[in-house]
Image 1: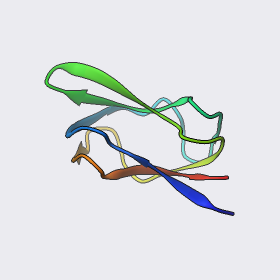
Image 2: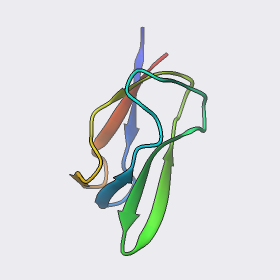
Image 3: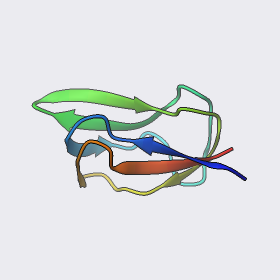
Length: 72
């Protein structure tokens, strides 16, 4: 199965993970919500598939960090 990364597009903190590890997600479904400068920024799945989380709520992330993998 190919794996596609879900990457952070801004530096901040993982505020919320609306999906659980191993969940089936649709393309465009919210995978994480980042907090950056008091703003909530949703990060969406680039493809449909099974989610493999690589972060936890409260983790600090930098732009380009992998938040999860989507197994298609």
